[in-house]
Image (spheres, rainbow, N blue to C red):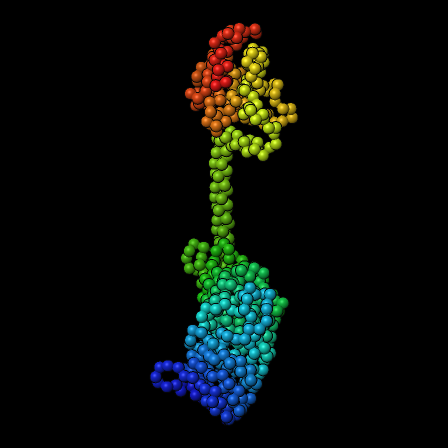
Length: 528
């Protein structure tokens, strides 16, 4: 007998049927080549059913498609006993979990090519040639590493529209496979070596598989690498939301086409191709490649202006498109450079405006990490006062002023002509002198106001005053100076400084009488 057909032979009531091992054994009671049990609401084929078939070695085709099979697992492990089976159709099973094929024996097959941890070994009937397992209603499950045993005769595998949540597994053991259907897979995560063992693959069906993302991540083009694809002649990539191929992919496809001598066909219809600046090389490739493309390479595409055009239109206007892209490139470049220049100007303006503040805090922080001699524990400051003066007032500062404060009053002064450390930067000396002095005395005359270093000493003293919130500044006016000639930085803090005006004969006498009120006020201001 060649055929037993029990398709659509279910009871009219709703529900599911269980085929016992005894009932199934009746099918093997005669030597039959084909058994068709399609569309029968079968949910379980009990374990031991195949083992009890008397003439199981006669069966060449078994069709259990369009049922509700979800168990039990033992039946799946017995399939390999059908030694003559060439065609197995297990497609379009409706339940949400498939017992026999979701609980396949886990072996120690591990692939370094996959990040997915589960690895399965599936034992096939030794004569199997065609496996149909499309449209299985499994839950969203990642594609595991699968190693098929005794799969050397398999030439056709159809697992289209089986919703694996990713393509991160590697399939091995099907070395002579010629057709592989993986349409409907979610290949946003794509293992480049997923089908690398299919060395004799001729046709790849991969519609609606999100390969636009998977191939984009395959930056080396390994998925279509020419060192393992030798006979591939047909690729269906329809409806994959592909916006275009980069040069890595197109070069791999051209290499593949040259090896199979002009027989490669690719379908790219119903994708989201773009005709813009990023796809200029792809548009040219569509019409110069020797690969046989559907529609002759003329597809609908999103044009640079947002309208719908065709790739043929884009090719006809490629020069204009290139010019638009060039002008767009320079426009974007100009805008970016302008924005960068504005940012640099703004930052420079802020830095310039607060340069003294930034430099002061830089010196404060650097001083904390710099090794310096510790002061006497009984004294908070090394000097009673730091005297900032211009060289025009050198004789008066180093004469009467020093004689009074250091000679008579026994105070310690810091003078840049005498106390600055040799070999150190001037800014470091100024900062250290101000930091180690209780007060800062500014000898202000017309020469002082014109000096850059004197202005810097004023700014450093002012910053320390703000930081410590103390009245540390003493201004001695040795010349008549109008308010409008005063630095703005000094006028802003005028109410917080001690100002002492030295009368003309006080600032010019070489042997002064220290009983003058000026000297008493100066001394009291320092020790206050």
